Image (cartoon, rainbow over all chains, first blue to last red):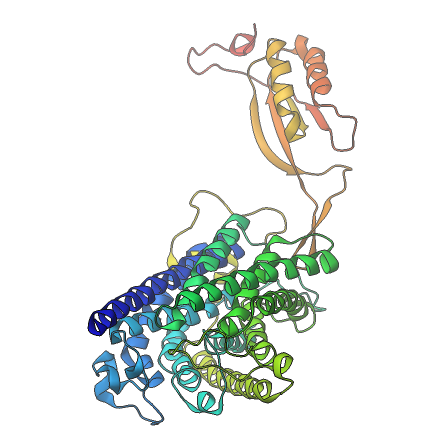
Length: 433
Length: 113
């Protein structure tokens, strides 16, 4: 009887994580639509190619080395016989505790790695050299991301200290955002984005419908993102996570809508979508650990922060981020990690697969968890910015990371891919740079 | 030839009015332009940008000299909204007109009831 129950539970848990993984996989199409909508017609093929091929590269790199690095315990050099997923489950510390097969866990981690890697493509869009971007992605998925993953969920030093990040605000979104930030600073802004006096020019995205579709698909995929991190199925906990995820999304959108009216006088739909995504990013750290009310508040603040960040980055720091990736994923992720230290509630659903943080500042009066989260944020930002900058700089001074001026003006589709996204429609029109 | 630059949303009215008047031949292009109508200011993610050239429609109609005033009146009445930006009409001389199917020339090449 107990044996049959265990088989059934393992079957449900495995099915659950695989299906949630499929939703996360589908986020790649969401990113593709979102980012392509934000760029100009002359760069659409380039944007789509990056989003598609980055998943190929990150999957291979993660299979080759990334997964082993992430789950190999505290050794600096992982056991080479565990590369390419050739070890047994218990070789990948600490996954031996999970009842589900290694392949299911690996599948879910693959799609997570793919999501992290694709964050970068939006920020460096419209001027990055394709081959350099693919090479960066390879190192990112082999090394930069898995090391952070090890620290945060691979029972590395941050985890052992008590830092918690349920579904990856720190591990996925902050890492992606910071890698993007390093790239964008070293790459420079698009031609025509800033005038001599650094005032910004609007470079219009070519398809608001694509941006919106992308936003919806990412929202759907995010349910997989958060719900799969239980590595099994719990009726109560997973239901709670679903509600918290959705709450952060809608409140993120409302927060961005509110500030869009305040600062811009009219609701900018692209900002609202960035806000909803920022709410989702912030929810990933703590959706299993907070109350539904807290999830609403976390999402609303995330939406507001995203709008403020986009405006400040453009007009104060002159950092050209065509899709707002650094604001949504970087700032949203940092806020999500910090919010855990504020809003983490006393344990509600005691689910064995996950490990709970201490109650946050608003529920215990103690700043212990908050301080831990801040340490985690500091470590992840430092590591990611520095190592990413090193890789970007090496690429810049060897093969170069930026296309030529002519290629940028003609459009990457023609210059790098030799094809047009919209054959026969010239993209010109007034105000198109 | 009459070249008329009109508001895009007046095109159906102008086409119908010309057709009823017996002038069914017409060539239409989507163009951008400006006269004394000021542009509009739009916003994208916090940055303002000016749309200086506005969408208009350009109509070309080739007619017999004797119909000139009639056609000008038809187009003007159908296209006018009395707001800035209603457009302009220009009159050009045409050297020759040929119907490709039948090789007719001159006024016989034009569409007319």
